[in-house]
Length: 290
Image (cartoon, rainbow, N blue to C red; front, side, top):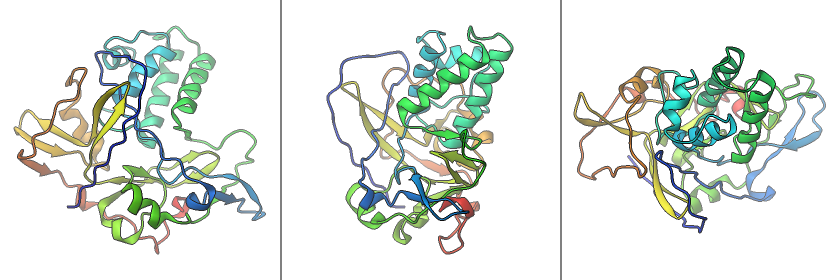
């Protein structure tokens, strides 16, 4: 297994909470690198820019704190407060796990349900607006339906240009909506969960099979990872992105404190079936994922 870790430190104003707040900065790529122009499937005309190759990585803990502020619930113990209002991914929150498109859609459904049942102080329109503003601020422009005015036409993203250089210079991103270069392909799991991003239809996304990243936020360094300590097995386990709803329940409710705990390099880890779901090869084009 190949691991890649690269951190970049930035200065931010101070701000701490009981939940680990982390926001992995998105890489900035020019048009000549990202290849992000897209064409309407019916007219083949250039219509807009597609999502970047390396979208922002936002841990669930950080997203939870931002979300309670937008929904006017309060910031302390954000995950517990959201869960008490019925707002959480299936089988709970994982503070250090990134917010992926499928998780974001789950959260969106729970926010709408909470607004309709009166578990939060916002009506449905206000809740939708608050969540939309948060997604825009964090660069997580993901939805379960095409945006208004798209006429339900499936715009397809062009093949990224210069993607090999991007991976070699910055390392493989934790998540990407486009097929990785062949040398990196086996490092990723394909998650078949349809979504829309920036007006573009995707049939799923690619997530690193194993990752542990130190990321800067508010003058502190935190962890984004899919490795968690199983208190029953007394081992480090790697969350399977396909079977995550089953495996998340082992960790739901665990608190990590304001600073994520270190994972000892000598710790024993166990894989939980993540290699059983094959990743589609680029030449077997998985529909909207290109």
